[in-house]
Image 1 (cartoon, rainbow, N blue to C red):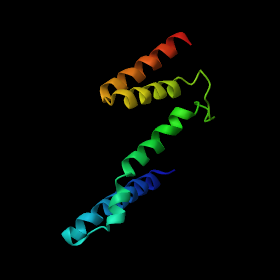
Image 2 (image 1 turned 180 degrees about the vertical axis):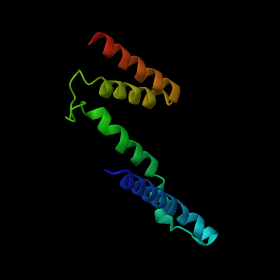
Image 3 (image 1 turned 120 degrees about the horizontal axis):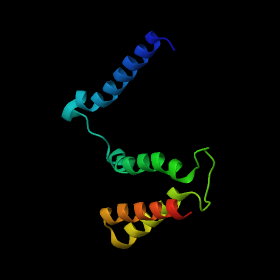
Image 4 (image 1 turned 90 degrees about the vertical axis):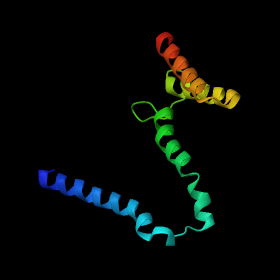
Length: 108
């Protein structure tokens, strides 16, 4: 890519991002989302997080789906999830996942 194409891509992405974020501000209080859309938007952060995290947890660096014992991220994530479902504490979830991940990396 030439430097002109790079700058055009940067300005284009900036414009599109600003426009999509400003749509709700432009309408002001007159813009009211239907109740169904509001209910659907409640799940957007969890869906986005799953879309970002799951591929990284479930695949090897080569992009192959793996449940092998060498996939330390997968088992650390499972242990963190188990802790969260049991205790409902975020700090414990992070600590549990990181301890399991570290132990697997050291001993496997």
